[in-house]
Amino acid sequence: MPSLSSYVPRESLVHGLHPVTKLVYVACILALAVVYSTPALLVVLLLATCCVLLAARVLRPAVRIMSRTVLLIALFLFVVRGLAEPGGNVAFALGPLAFKQAGLDVAMLISLRLFIFVAAALTLLLTTYPPYLMAALEEKKLSPRASYVVLSTMQIIPMMQARATAILEAQQARGLDTRGSLLTRVRALFALVGPLVLGSIEGVEARAMAIEARAFLVHHRRTHLYAVATSSVDRVLMVALPVLTFAFATLRFLVR
Amino acid sequence: MTLAIRLEDVSFTYQGAATPAVADISLAIEEGERIGIVGPNGSGKTTLCHLLTGFVPHFFPGQLRGIVRVGDLDTSSVGPAQLALSVGRVFDDPFEQLSGVGMTALEEVAFGLENLALPREEILVRSEAVLRAVRLWESRERSPFELSGGQQQLLAIASILAMRPHILVLDEPTSQLDPIGTDQVFGALHDLRESGITIVVTEHKIDTLASFADRIIVVHDGRCAAMGPPRDVLSSPDIERWQIEPPMWSRIAQRLRSGRDTRVCPLPVTRGELMAELSHAAA
Image (cartoon, rainbow over all chains, first blue to last red; front, side, top):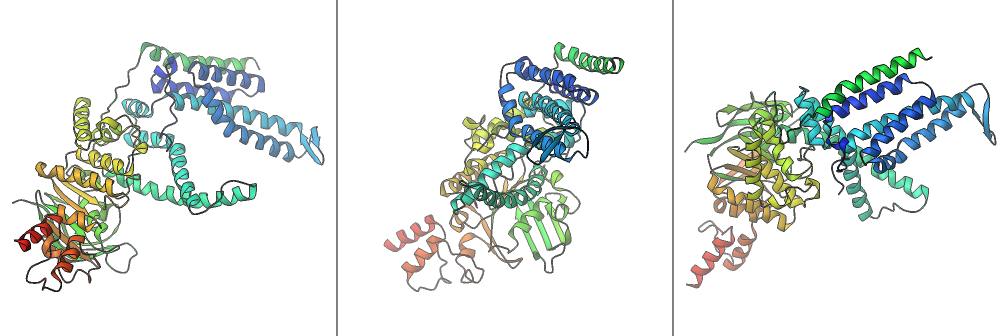
């Protein structure tokens, strides 16, 4: 059974930061990714986020996750945008398929932004122990309901993986073949998706009952098993990151 | 004795259902009693648990008649979260009743205590006490999802007990467990005898329930068909009509008695009662 969290425990400066500092970092990166509109600047931003992942010693798991998700979406984008662009120069052709330069440019921008978004989000997810995030958010006056939603959303993928594994094992025990040709695997996928989706919907109701039974939201405030400290580095970063973001964004508009 | 639970002529029909899930149920449960509820699937056992913990009518809407009082609270006016302060609920599926935010067994137990806004020191003291009580203290740093089914159910019980409810309602807590897991769960419930907590448990494993409960309630077609000490209820000639399998010890005794009238002397329903009968016969 997989762990319930994407968190990767490591000794690093990024791991030690207050979760809200990391949230501010993610917001700043997202803002810059939206403001920057040239591939060169976006590549620089992507490299910067990768440097932060490297400093946090989670670059490898982050690349693994991105290669399974964002890379596939990016490839899909290049194909669709490249072929669907109505006019303009043809960048290259594969037999009867003509890929347009304008479509590829748009796909490049969207893909780079997507990589940046995910890399920044993974910096938070892979380096933050989830209960610390919940405690930190509620410490900053976020409602327990909202912080529960944030935290449980962070667990969706690992929990779905756990549920999918259980369903697959049950289906295999009843003779479902999940290996072999593409057609066989697609058939196995259909056998998985139905129970997974229905089970997840049922699971939401069961979880709602489970947390009600644990007196969730009976008081307006919750206490926490963990106390999350705000260091002087956090205080500096919480001010410096938005200021720098604003400066870089302004510079971008000035140097048009 | 003070009453822990009182139901007066309670009927409940789920929204959209044609017939009531439970009908005309009246019962009184004293503080510290251990009540076993039995009945076939669909007889209304889970609805009864929902009534005691406020999920009916607050979570599952429908038409409720009669009065359900738990301690001093009328469950029709108090929601499940508020009732959870005095009534603990353990569900049948160990996986689904985890909070989803506890990364370790310790954090899972702490979740309910955090909701009660207890100080951190108190959270730690209570969590350690209940995890030791259910013999999970050594596993406190393990993910709840890495525990066995029996251990997950023990963790669920510990998570509820940490909140120190006066009443514990367990709905088929061993339905997904093997015999070892079942023994672990009922072992933990036996250990609660001294605490004076009132326990209501629905269960299909009649042998286990017969040796655990002070009283058995039979629910059949949504109605209370019988109520009394296990030996009186489970040796009743009506047991097959209620679609309940007699305890193994009763079946053995039935064979040994070979046709003696069970109405004169009720059949034993626990191992201890059977052994006593055999000793008496041998003497």
